[in-house]
Amino acid sequence: MIFCLSERRNTMLKHDYGHLGCPFYEEVLDNGMTVVILPSKNKLKSATIYIAQGGFLHSQQISTSKIPFGSAYYLMHMILPESLKDYFKKEGVLASSTLDYSYVCYSFNTLGDIYAPVKKLMGRIAKPCYEEKDIEAFKENERNVSLLREKDALETSKRGCLNNLYLSSPIRYGYIPSFDDGIRIHASALKKYQDMYYSPKNVTLFIATNEDPHAVLEEVKKLPPLHSSQFEEQPFTYDEVYTQVNQEFTKKVMDTPHSYLTYGIKMPARANIYEKYGDLAFAFYQILLKTIVLENDEFKDNLTNLRATLVSTSFKEGGEDSYILLSFQTEDEVSLIHFLTNYFARLDKKVSNSDFKKIQEETYAYAIRQLVLPNQAVDAFSKTYANHIPYTSLVHRVTRLTFNIYRRFLEEFKTFKKAVCFVQKGNVL
Image (cartoon, rainbow, N blue to C red; front, top):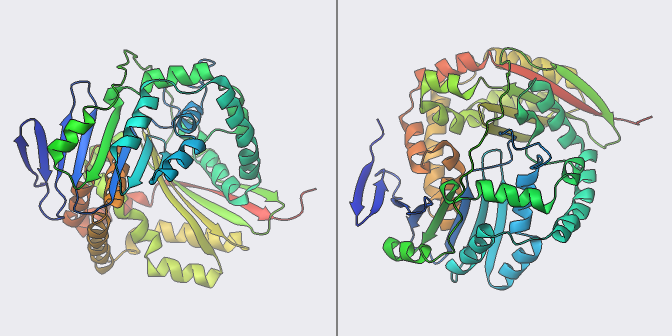
């Protein structure tokens, strides 16, 4: 059981999990927007505007002529363009944006007034702030970015592996549109998308500052009001088969200095995992890559012997689907695939109780370090928010997890379906 001390002072709810020294306040405003306040003693002030809608092709309205796939990506760059980032920088504010399958985040860090950049961006969220010419200019820039992405052997191996894993799930398309996807995107589509999804019920403001939380809330209430949408989403339905993959192996030759292999693991439907493990599933996910790959001595030693280098790891969730991609630089794909196949077939034997305890302790220590600085604390909270679990609660779940339960999950994990995409260096005829 997770111990959470909650108390109300006026209308704001205070949560304190008691072991990480990071209480936080939560308030749902009258318009439906949620505010999460993280008290801090640091001079640095940080804020993130979290939109609970990412680049996942999740509804029937998206990938139509009215709202093409990729609209989330284009809209993010219209709301926070490079020119506005430069403006904020001159004002002493570092601004950035992040897109994932499930969310978009706009983040700010400053030693000055944190409300000024938040207010400016909330105004751009509340009302469209771009024209067709802005989108066309961005498309021209994206042309070059897309060409570089297409010529990147590592990215090609990742995209190929993702396509190999899934038969029908839209997660295989990723959340970054191609240049061809972008051709179909116009201002009218972005305005529809913004009207539908950038509404108060989808917005959470995370803010870390050294001010009194109730004073912070009063400042937040002065922000430009957001438009409430009456939109009713029509879910994009698909029948994914989780007991098989689209293709187990594909190979491509590219004119590139290095060869890359991406090994993908296809997780069962989210509902099935949650039915078996409940909220513990999210604790598994928090330590999974560390225990089986990143900090597993056997795994690392074998890579050294194979002269293979792990260059990228990712665990992604979108809708009902989630996957792991492990990307390697290698010249011997046969030996690497042989090792990975055998390793994951006996995965429950590859993590010892002492290894597990060590990762638990490191996760707790890492969380303590994360929560010291406002920007890191806000980032940690926003990244776990898609699963509706506060970061401090998630860390507590990890520390309470038993090895036997985790090993049982690994026994099931080794049966999950896998796929490989290998991009070999060579002369393309």
